[in-house]
Amino acid sequence: MIDTAILTAGLTGVAALSGVLVSVLADGLKDRRRTAHERALREEDRRAAASDRRRTFELENLISAYDGLWLLAREAAKAHQADVYAAKNTEHGYGGTLLPAGTEVDLSQTSQAVKSIRLILNDDVRRLALDARDAMTAVSMLGLRAKIFQTGPVSLAEGEAAMADATHKIDAAMEAISEQIRTLMAQH
Image (cartoon, rainbow, N blue to C red; front, side, top):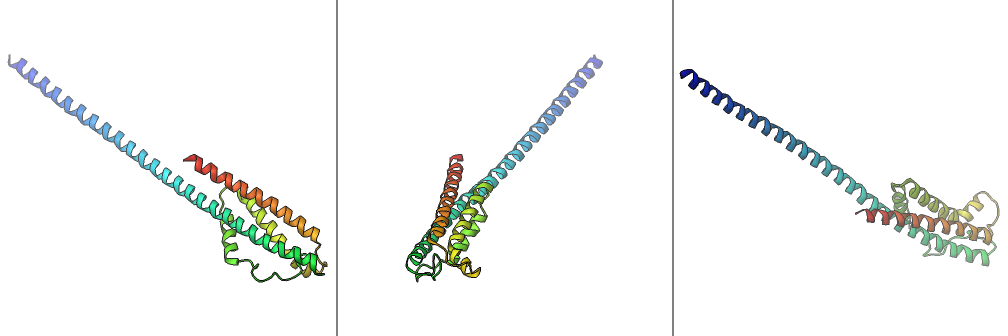
């Protein structure tokens, strides 16, 4: 009988220890899964925060680039009108005279526009915007370039063709920027 009592007590002790061991192992696995889950959540939060920062940067920069292109287009149009007037009314040709007061380009605004354009993340959109900027600069520089290289006055037709090219490129760039903004806004 003692042997059975000892055996029963021993089995009860082993069963209790096994229960404790199983409980400890189960708690350890639960902690490991919880820790892994929390780590995955933190990583997802980091990725989401980085994505939000990138999206915010991109949106703010695209809007700034759009505004900058609009400003550059407006400045180019003012200069173009003055140059058309000069081509029609002087012997100096298109872009051959100084711009009248009030038509000067605001260099701080145009340089900010150029900075924003260079920060556009989408390569195709950035290329279109840079091409538009270059075309507007080319319109503004026609008369000066003719004076520097002594190629004679620039004709009104050349000025009109350069402005038409710049206008086409401005429209394409601004539409691409608008499309990129709409795409980003539709994502959230």
